[in-house]
Length: 357
Ligand SMILES: Cc1ncc(C[n+]2csc(CCOP(=O)(O)OP(=O)(O)O)c2C)c(N)n1
Ligand SMILES: [Mg+2]
Image 1 (tube, rainbow, N blue to C red):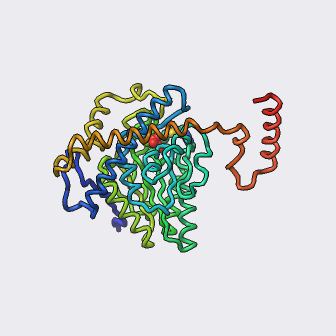
Image 2 (cartoon, helix red, strand yellow):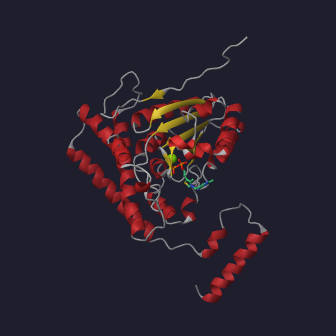
Image 3 (cartoon, rainbow, N blue to C red):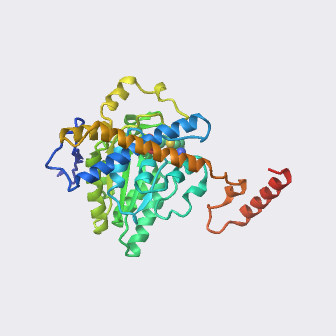
C-alpha cells in the first residue's frame, strides 16, 4: 500500500504590481492617508540611508547596513504592529525602528556604536549581530506573553541567510508546538553577504521551512508596501487571537552593499541590480499614486525636503552626545554583573585614571 500522507502548498501575495496597479480583490481595508504615511516613512528611511552612508564615509560612524530596496518590507510590516508589541530586529531594521517611532537621534547614536542608545526602550530590542540568534529570545518573549495571558505579540526579523541556522529551526519548532503569538518575518533579500539565495538552501521557498513545524507560512512581494502590510496585519490578528505563529517570507532585494565594508560589484551582476531597480518599492508607490491621481511633484518634493531636515537634525543631535567612557563596555550585558567583570571594570577604570585618558 502506498498513499500520500501529506502534501503542501505555499501562497504568494501581491497587491500592487511593479507598475502600481492594484489587485482590488486583495486590497486590505486601509485608508488612503495611511498609504501616504507609509510612503512618507519609506522616503525617510531612504534619506536616513543616504545620509548615514555619507556619515560613515566621512569617518563619523564605524559601519552602516543600508536598508535600500527593503523599505516596503520594513515600513509595511511595522505599520501592522501596535506600539506595545515586541520587536526583535537583526541589524538591517533601521526602517522598522523609524516606523515604530524610535527617536531618530538614538538610531544614529546606535550606529555610532553607543549601546546607551537602546536603554529605556523596552519593546524594541537592540540589534542582533549573531545571525539568527534573535529568533530564540523572540520565541521566549512570545512564550512569556502567552503564559502571562498578555495581548501583545512578538515579531522577529531576520534574513534569508539566518534560515540556515539551527536557532531558526529550534525557534520555529517551539513556536509551532506551543502555538505562540509570534511572527517570523524573513527579509529574503536574495543575498547573505556574497552567498546568493540559490546557494543558501535547497528548500525551494523559505516559507516551506515553517510548514514542517506547523507554522502557517506564506510569501509576499516584499517590494509591495500594501501587500506586506496586509499579510503582516493578518498574521498579527491571528497571533493576537490565539491562533499561533506565522512565517512570512518577504521577497525583496538588498539594493546596496551588505554593509559599508562590502563591495557587492565583486559578486553580482549589473543586470541583476537593474532588474531590481525597476522594482524599487518607492517608485511603485509613486506609480500607484499617479494611477489614482493623488500624486503631484510638489508633494514629492515636500516629502523629501521634510525628511532631509528631520535626518539632518537627528545627526546633529547625535553627534553632540558625549562619547561613552570605556568602562561602559561592561555595562548592560548582565542584570547583575559577574564578579570577574566587576574586577575587570575596576582595573580598566584605574588604568584610564592613571593614564589620564
Ligand atoms: C552566527 C553568525 N555567523 C556569521 C556571521 C557573519 N555575518 C554577518 S551578516 C551575515 C549574512 C546575513 O545574511 P542574511 O541573514 O541574509 O541577512 P542580510 O544581511 O541579507 O540582511 C553573516 C554571514 C554572524 N554575524 N553571525
Ligand atoms: Mg539576506
